[in-house]
Length: 139
Ligand code: DQA
Image 1 (cartoon, rainbow, N blue to C red):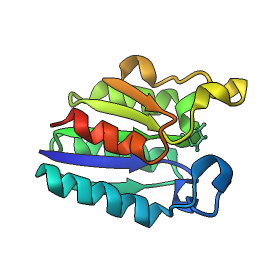
Image 2 (cartoon, rainbow, N blue to C red):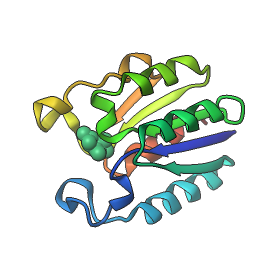
Image 3 (spheres, protein in one colour):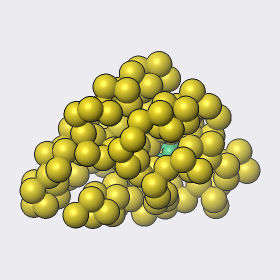
Image 4 (cartoon, rainbow, N blue to C red):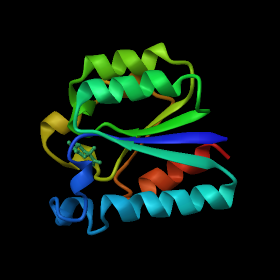
């Protein structure tokens, strides 16, 4: 089982970015923890982070023949990127949408996700465990 974990804009700054909301773990330590759990489950995990919409779309396209599943935190693109939504709709592997924070208890603009309707599932508000729970789906 090969799983790609995609993180969108500003998630490279985890640890220093609004730690009260996103926690104190860095992006690198988050990836290390996901990789470790992946190893325990016998999964091959790969990681991709970009602050650029087009790069995320390219990563989704490239993944379609190489991975069995995708876990994506699209960051703020979640709320308005129809292009990322279309890229997810275009590929035929399961995509799980995750968020570190509970977007539903935050600002109104975060309550709506344009990608949820075409994702296999959505996990939000569990901190880094959102990613770990998404990994369990692929067991
Ligand atoms: C986020 C929530 C988004 O609203 C925000 O723009 C992010 C992170 C989360 O993981 O909680 O960048 O996706």
